[in-house]
Length: 255
Image (cartoon, rainbow, N blue to C red; front, side, top):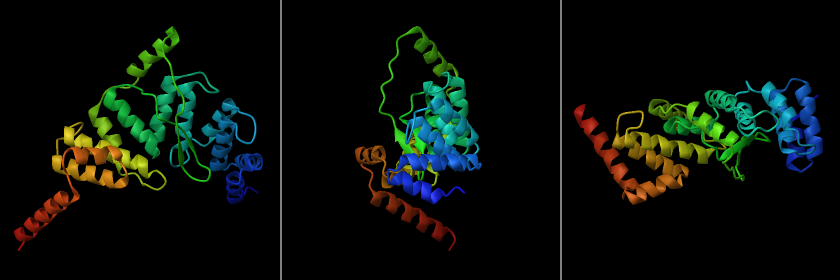
């Protein structure tokens, strides 16, 4: 019988071949997370051969798993043509599913895509779940120039429409995401959500709310938010003073 804890421990010890075999056994028993982890090993060639085509099947089996990580990895396979024929339409479909299932990386991607009307190249090119959610950042360089790539570039513009309200919605989802393991990405969502209020993107301009969310983003670890606050001379005391003023005003109103 599949033992998740043992498989994770083996993987973390560097005993990847044994861990991979255990993930496979779990997948055969119908365990979605084990199937995801086995697919990840196949995709990255960990503990055995690199086989993204087979990885796609195991990610597909796990696509309804809560969290949206499997759909995110499926999106990456189709976006980059690993083990499958490159298909930007399917890449977007799985990215949307991932965002709807609660994946903060996908929520940020969808927000940026709808803010620009373009299927950008993601900084995060995959997600590991061994032993927990871990984003994997890109170390690749993608070059454009031939006819096929020009056609793909057109697709990246035509598949997503610029829609400020939709971008605002996804940035809000990312900003309110559980920060466990992904605090840096939630901070990014908070920064972008704050900018929506400050610039009136997809919502009415609300400088007070935007500034307060920007401060929260800075406390959560967003360097962009910290720079914004510094450049605009905004301090925590200014926000606290304003909050105290509004609180006292509300109290007096009800006295």
